[in-house]
Image 1 (cartoon, rainbow, N blue to C red):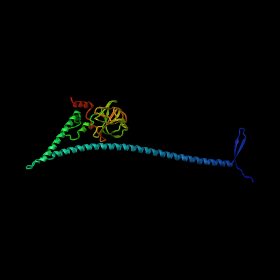
Image 2 (image 1 turned 60 degrees about the vertical axis):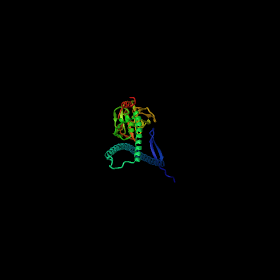
Image 3 (image 1 turned 90 degrees about the vertical axis):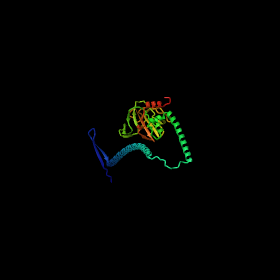
Image 4 (image 1 turned 120 degrees about the horizontal axis):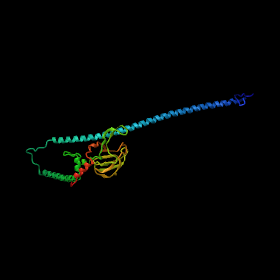
Length: 326
């Protein structure tokens, strides 16, 4: 018995106008249909995978954008926290100074209010041993006074006393007057104060920030002078202040000079008040040529205005008037 075979006939007309029949076995049609179904499923699978990949890519981009936003917010909060810490430390230093001044005055008032001892009638005279001990104490005081005299004379010859008087030394001052003599009391450069110490609007990003010094405008290349005698502890390219110089004046007082165009000193060098240490520039984060001048007490920025008392010409005149033979 013969198997039945099924065909699909394709009828076409040739160029001569005759009809031609093309038989196609049905099993090939099944193969084409199966291949089409498999291809359709493959296309659908690929489309689904591509769609899932697009969704994952979009989700990844969103996570990355959120991470960048969090990083910027954290950096901004860190800067704000740093500025607040500097501000609190500066205010704490000012409060300590006020407290010390108030306590000094209170001690003076208490000392003035204490009654002086009066001799009691009929009291026995001190013994000879006590008198001898008193003489030894008096001789020691005289010796100390003579040593202090020679010390003051030597310092007066060097002009330190004149600098201390100029820095605020008065007749009733009881602190260490050498701190006033060594204080950075000279303006490092003459010019307009463009930005003061304290809260301000950052000129670069326009946000609120705490300014740890004063900005003094001056022409490009103007010499910058040391505000006081000291040792150079840094003369390098900084991050925000560009080329900067730091001086150690002793008594835990330091000064910083930023945005310089050139540096004229080297670390370890000892400089004197008025000596050129650099030149005005606009290196670092600056919008124009100026000097960022900073005073640090115990490594805490304080208001430089409490130290700025004279210009370079006034310092030269003061030194000349206090030198011997003038």
